[in-house]
Amino acid sequence: MRGKTHMIFGAASYWIIIAKIYPTPSSPIQLSILTGMFLSMITSVIPDFDLDFGIKHRGPTHSLLAILILALPLLILSYLSYWIIPITLSIFIGYTSHLLADFLTDRGVCFLWPSEKRYGICLWTYNTAWPWEGIFILICNIIVIYKFILFVSISL
Ligand SMILES: [Zn+2]
Image (cartoon, rainbow, N blue to C red; front, side):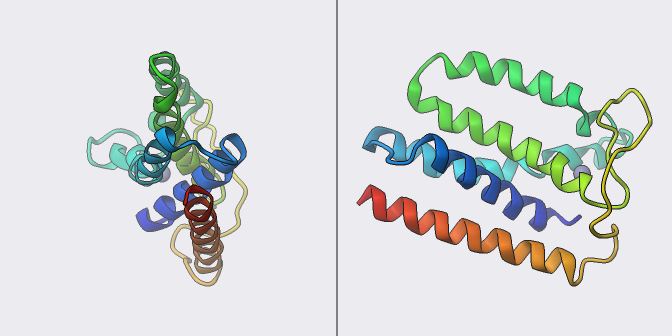
């Protein structure tokens, strides 16, 4: 799965969850929510940094252990102030969305690393981006645009 697919899926996942948590966000938290959208896109590509560091691809960075290690400091940070919560959530959602998206490919991910067993359901193969990955990107774009317009209209 390509980086831009991960980014738009991260943003769509973020908006779906954040709209449930903050249906009518107050003004101090609106900036955090917008910042979170960009952070969810950035953090959605972090798991693939394993390729740059020579770590087993779709191994430790794509595991439940990585999610737990990430969640602990984010949970602690969330207690500092209420406006940080959309930020910490966006990082968590972005990262986790990457694992979920890779789960949808034929290669799967090592969720239970250090076990080498890969888990996944094959909606599309790694190299076959069209049409399924294209349709997936289109649906995610529609979600992001719709949720963003809704957020702006509620915020004004
Ligand atoms: Zn990946």
